[in-house]
Length: 490
Image 1 (tube, helix red, strand yellow):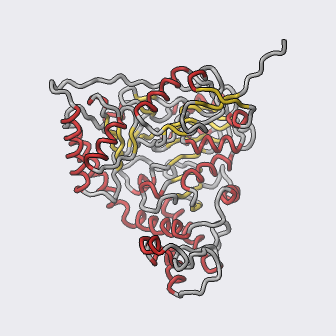
Image 2 (tube, helix red, strand yellow):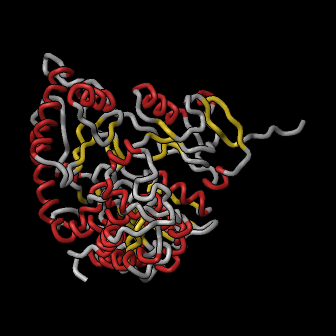
């Protein structure tokens, strides 16, 4: 097969054109049975391929036809032995990776700045996380990658680990020395699982960091929808044979996947793969060029900064993705959320995320010089409005709490006897809940960790400025579920 072919999308279109009489779900029957306003907005073409796993269209759970062909083409494009399509997003693919190698009590080595889906998989599998502390950037207030030295040390202490998970690249575009990390792990016969949610494009341009498959990783959960042109919620799981069983991966991903799989999402994966494989280098090259131009102009605006190659001076930063624009606003005397809200209100600009100190903008093949010019104009106005008249920056101290201590396994904590107390009185107690700011979805606490005053202060700071703190059962964010303590009988 050729990378110019789209067997899944083409098969769907041909089936729709045959105009079959449908006595199967979905019940809207090509849109005839749904609300007319919604139908007219979505369009007849989309609704005509909103189908289910009838015989001519294959079955994602047991692919033998057009889905199997589409997955084979994707594996070839990504340099994998096997590629599995995910309609559960990259979160579903990440949970599949962890649960494919870990069972109850098994150790898995993970950076502490992992996405919540990793910790969810650890709870589901009953695995024990061995945390590696990522390096913290004291200027930007963000976590970077893990070092080869920390990986070597972790494996020396825990050679019986069933897997090593690496984030490559991070949400902010930072990558570690993945090739060396893979080599170290493989010397211990430990498979490497890569959270590649923010790196689908790096495989298709030689000027970007190494992709997971290029580095020899065993599995990679890759968000095609984030930066690769497919529809939201569609991702792939790339697998290399050897230390991982593709048959087990298929079983686990099937367990975690709805039986009512969306063929619109699957078709978008098929067509996105074609475009990446056949046009990706040029499209991504243009996006890199636009991003670098924006970066240069941002760094000319008073009180704003956007790091580039100089970020490589850090020991935990081996390479970086220039299409991620980390724009520090702390010297304006405002936080990232205030900058995000101002850009929305004044220029109708939506950024990828904001935190206490930065905003993050991503540049993809969907961007042009026109959007770049609007962003630069807006940032210039932002600086004019909030910059000090004497041209002196408002240096904000970057505050990041210590990583909490893990007192018990996340699974044990999640299923333990618990009680609800106020956040203000929770210092020193063991959390039974996740709490995070999303995006990026990196937990401040996970079940089993000891709540510290520093971390409570950090949570309060995020709540005060309006950042999206999530995870607690209490939507008012005033109480937290903790492990119940029993007094001794007198």
